[in-house]
Amino acid sequence: MNDCIFCRIAEGELPAQIVFQDDDFVAFRDIAPKAPVHLVVIPRRHVASFADVAELSADERARMAVFLAEAADRAGLTSTGYRVVTNHGANSRQSVFHLHWHILGGALLSDSM
Ligand code: DGP
Image (cartoon, rainbow, N blue to C red; front, side, top):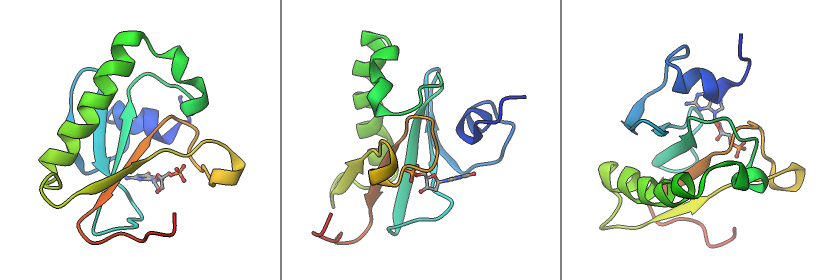
């Protein structure tokens, strides 16, 4: 069994509040939100972190950016604004080792990060 939490969410083996998905990407609500709206966006293909983004195809990399904007829009964040961030490695406090993007919004965010 795949022990990657985000692979299992993508496969439907673990529950998640999915906001938007297509054949290659899934957007779902973060289990420990750091903002009123906090989405996690993943490629279905397992890639450990942004440092390994070259493991995705050029087409996947391009569509990932478009998917991020679409997921934020579907969460109602386009007009008020949002932040997109990804963590790689220990100093960033990455805790799940499947490439993911955080989309944060729904309030005025801290300027300290
Ligand atoms: P990071 O620190 O960048 O690796 O962020 C991992 C995020 O994933 C963190 O904000 C919490 C979230 N998370 C961890 N496990 C689960 C889960 O099982 N379900 C959901 N929805 N989010 C999770």
